[in-house]
Image (cartoon, rainbow, N blue to C red; front, side, top):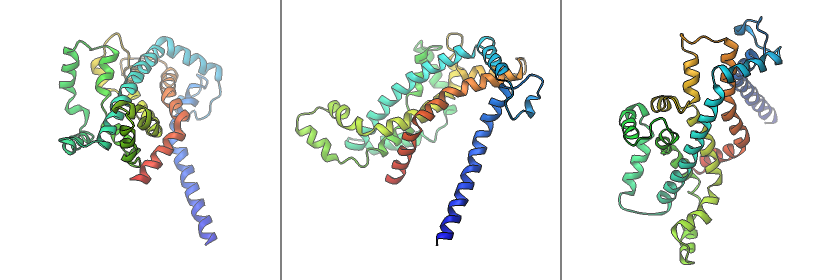
Length: 275
């Protein structure tokens, strides 16, 4: 039994190591290509050998491609999106979990069905609505449609399944109002769910291309659109500068995940156990 357990652990360790190497390989290629000498073939460089040249390429990417401004713009509308999304999703999860109202099952079914609908199906009427509201090429115009997420509602509801409704009823008997119960009791218990949703939706919003490319023009520069334009055939720039721009674009979501990965793992584990 001990031998079987040891072999099983070795198997899973080797499998995890292989998967880690496969996942980190593209990031390592970007880093090595950026921080290498110009004389090296960028497609055959797997180890960094010139930190100074890499810093120069990053600086050139920030000035030539304007990746710095694009990063700031993207961070602003992503932050606005996440704040609005957390408010809407947490309130929706609270209502669906603890309250019965006419049409609840129908509304919840519609919310879940919307998860299976790709954005391309409704992007035209959505764009027309934002345009007629005068929000095109604004932070709110990019953020507002992205604040609605059925997945976020579903994730947060998983963290409310174990909360007995008797707590809500006791607070109501003590005189607490609807929103006071939500803020003082429910919201703190949803901490892991909120952090999990924040990280997942931050990465999703940061990498959005279709909607930001349609609704922005001159004032807002989404980083995904800047990277896509940089890779166009008629846009020439040094290959290492392109790699440096991709490296800069990758840093914010990576830092967010590294800071909150413990809560994400705990959240996913708790929701899977409850499910």
